[in-house]
Image (cartoon, rainbow, N blue to C red; front, side):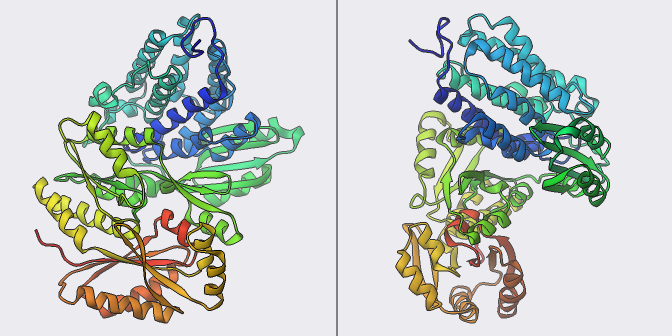
Length: 586
């Protein structure tokens, strides 16, 4: 008997509920950029999608108990939306059968409302209310038809947010957090009912409410968006929560045992930190500058001839993607027992842990998340050029071609197997996206990318061989003797994998090797691009390598980028890289 669709047996297998949670998070991740783009409330800082992706990651990971999962949600929660969602899910993760879905959801809804000092309708809180209302009407014998009705109610609740908050009405959008939760439940219920509930077309449903009115403006907020974790004395939790509520505004709190997660906005970062330290033992602290985030959000996207899509495994940051209008497919970093989305991970955390000996590896997004990402890009843009990481490195090319065969009859998503990875892919994508902003001819963009693909090159300088050995890419014995002899290999990405192109012993030999390669490749180039990438050594790369290269090639545009964390997890701290591209004419 099918436990998911039967009106008799509503018990859920642990694997089934886990798969449903994973699908919900993956669907949110695929639409995170859109959520960021319409995030105008409570502050127009463009990070609702990012915060939900970070906050909900624990739902995709295995924990020894629900207690540990709830603790992970508390520690991961970021931003206003992420902290409210984490509070709801701290209860919702306890669901074990369809019969208790309503009761558990109601418990999570109540926790979410209570966590906010000044709760408002028209946010994701209204979606939780709508979920309870819907389940009250359809909780006797849940089946796919009932879930369609539930999603209809959630859909209407998202539409209604525009009427409930004047900020949304003025900007002409629905609430980003509310839409994020609708997207989650759309994915969650579809998997829970064996795909008998079809995914809804986000763009078709909300098409007139997914773009901020070009005339809309806001003065923005001064101050800081703060996420902190405090350990409190057991007997003073209530008084402590009252004191926390006075530290700032937009306050959200989430308690778990002796710990409390705090989200708030404060005008004075150091003052807020000092106040919180006076309330309890500060365990974790993250702060974002609201003025800077608002200024970035208000940057009006430029018109492209052709939308560019690529993989986060190239050295492309979220900032690059926003400024150049690039859609990035996420990849993941496994660090010890935890898994992090690459574009949302702090590089200092990765390299610091690697230096301590923590195992690091990489993984691709699930096929489901990638499919959702393709669908998102194809539905938001008339035509998309996907410059895909080389098929010799991942299965992304095969995955997208399989998706196209079933879902893209009009060839809206054009795919190029670049044969590239790391900064070689990143520079190709950045250069092509820049060109797409200059021309109005889509075919010219395709020709540019095809020609640039044949010209772009990269050198990766590895500092310590034992990081490669940890990942199984060379023998541990070889790494030991190589490090002992101070051997520093130079490698280059090629279509069939990474190739060793040289060996050096110190930074002087590294820069000499780099300059000789550049002289050979760029001797006739009037205005080449050179992208220098750093790991935990930005100052060295910027102050020494960049200066030397700019002196030798004054005609070149030389710019800095963080090395892709996919590459960094393999090559380790101390590595740096140089991608270069002669001027491309089409």
